[in-house]
Image (cartoon, rainbow, N blue to C red):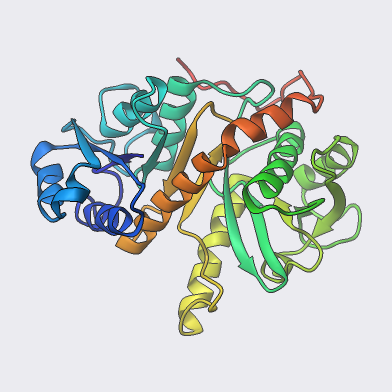
Length: 319
């Protein structure tokens, strides 16, 4: 796993702590630390001799700041070097708690995108009452059109089946009511688009769902929305858990999400991630790689027709 040591609000301290926890927890885990040598050496020095053999370093001193424009990822930086490590076969996956936009940009440019996916999606899994609920997008694409949301429904259904063994996933579109015609212009256009798209793994579209249903999981296993709304919802759930005195025993709102639509396993942690969140992000990346989730989901998408005409507001990631 390639780990971006300089990504995140409190990097490198929390990233180092999280990486230490991950190595000590998983005896089969190997890390490629991407960042300043002195930071990596501090982490390695805290490990016992056997654990040190499972850690290597790629020295990089430049980071993309959380306030920097995503295009900064085109220059030399820790996240770009981590992406290239995956591209070159040096690492199997990458984990970063840095700028989401920079990570998505670096991954799309460095790894390439799947056929039929113009805009990758960040997917998070929430511990709902009735079982896990896959929520996407949670920050990859802020202004999608109906065709993009339809493609993300395919991504989410395949991911739920492959990563979480959900049989025949039920897919819903997040809106302000369950009746047809509810919602803004995007939701009203996306509803029939999702109803028409073929879904893999025996999945079926069940129509519109409301926000509270994301936490219940009774009607939908996969909930599709735009990245702006999904990100706000995810952080609102985090705040609700904090007000309630902590997350449920089954787990809290995830502070790490998988990036779907690029040719590699990429996990993006919350910028405000704590050490245990970073460790969980590394564990998620390892889990997805061991299940071959990226390749399997990509293969499933090849069998699902897609609309070759992009949304009117769709744009490519500039080279």
